[in-house]
Length: 174
Image 1 (cartoon, rainbow, N blue to C red):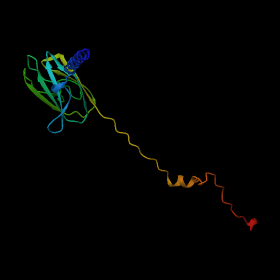
Image 2: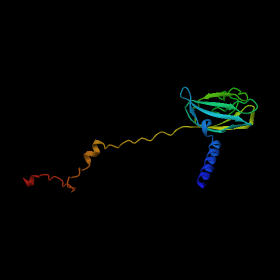
Image 3: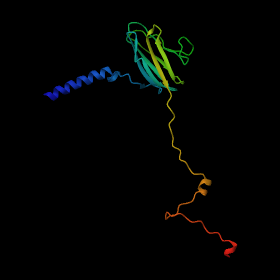
């Protein structure tokens, strides 16, 4: 009986943990989009973004799926590569009405940290987008001896003993 009770308590805790972490079919994990881009779900609710910190790779295509769970319309504006709002390089979604879903498609090639916000709540409804570039993959290049280095190096003998130099005959030996 104690084992059954312990199993029920554990199952309840795991269920609460999964719900708190976004488990189930409504997870916040990125999913593939129709053309190979990555789709990231963001909820807009009670004047905040969830999640409010995003990390993406430079040079890849993304779609932000914006679900408005708040009582007023919101958009999402990413300050462009100059990290200034209201300039030509901003990435801006349309306003998403309460209970509706909108999208913002984007690609940023420059690594960095960029701010984002809702224009209707520019002070409280904010977040950051970190764009990173994967480091190059290290490759192993075998070192091959140059022909001149091989000719100058003595070749070891099969017995492991050092080879003696070949005697050169001189006119006195003849």
